[in-house]
Image (cartoon, rainbow, N blue to C red; front, side, top):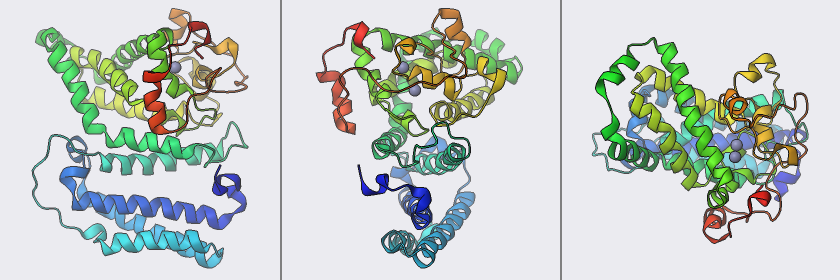
Length: 375
Ligand SMILES: [Zn+2]
Ligand SMILES: [Zn+2]
């Protein structure tokens, strides 16, 4: 455990402002690199969505904020190392051109890194969920920078940088392997429905496929060793949900996109679902006990999914659904435990190796576990 992890952040004010400054400073630097090398470091699908001028404005504001917080940490709290690091990152970003880097025409290679996707996701997700977890924590003693946060951050970074590989694989899977099953007349009929109805249908269709794919990974002893990576964190928070073996990322995304592709829903309905599931997948892992009231029977909540990650015997192989608990109710895998939270999380028995590479190699070297001992 590092020194920073051992020190409670809330009693080290300089470290809080300094840490935010370093976090922003690093993201600013990466954003400047995106302006310099858009062909290699940005995602074509995402570039169509955001406005570059707005991004320049956000970057300028973020650089001013990072510099101010660094100065605050340095001069108000005397946090020299952390303050100087924050200022240095901002100065390097300015030296590299800051928000004023010109972007000319360029050819798009087949594969690029999703650095723009990473920067935007990390900034917005961290801001939203660190706030939620500090305001309405479930485990009040758990720090934001708890043990193994670095490992989960590596997973978050990798799975975002690989966005174009994920899109290529999922598109190939649906269009090349299942393109023959597309029926234009049927798709027109689907698209003629109101968008709100299509949104519900997308959610149900995608969640149904996700439910059985997820359950298969729990019930098949070989696939379990891949999925065990997602279950190995002993602490739950918004970042821990990123710990997913890349093989599982490709498997889940490819299978979930299939019903959406075959049914041919309208773009607005699909985009709504993508945004919903992006927030929801982080929320259900986060360390928060926001009361959702009766909504907890309608949508999966942190309480619902924390029980899926529980090491308690009563919760093994329960609550598979990503969004709709009704699927678990229908297929006999629902556990409610209203008002009670799990005692512990993680895999039962021999722990998985630590480290991104070791965990990615784990399914190939670990013997398949007997079903009774798999969690
Ligand atoms: Zn699972
Ligand atoms: Zn999970």
